[in-house]
Length: 109
Image 1 (cartoon, rainbow, N blue to C red):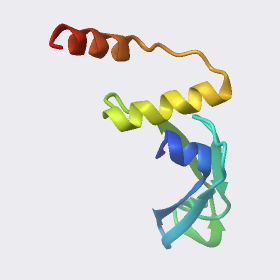
Image 2 (spheres, one colour):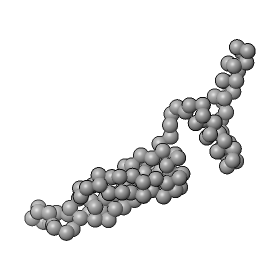
Image 3 (cartoon, helix red, strand yellow):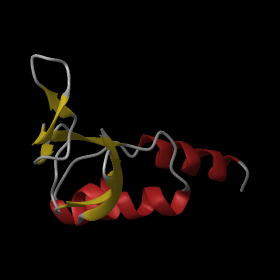
Image 4 (cartoon, rainbow, N blue to C red):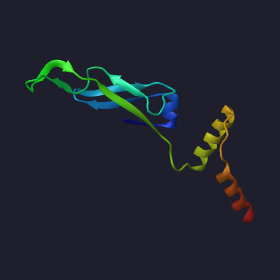
């Protein structure tokens, strides 16, 4: 499993994965979705023959699943940028936290 932020999922990113043969670069394309799976052919665990010994050239595939994580807390600038993006895309969102801050500000003004 590779954890990616919402910005990495939207814009694309590269990750270095530790495999049995050393580091491998995984290029995650822009627009990747949570749960998408990538397969690195021949980079997995060696297959075992019936005698229990590893075959020299036969390897399984390494499957990598994408987990997009959403931050639980945003600072004011991050929230502002995400709200602006939502507006640009015509998406609805809850501005409740912004309204609460406005009420607190006006109470002390």
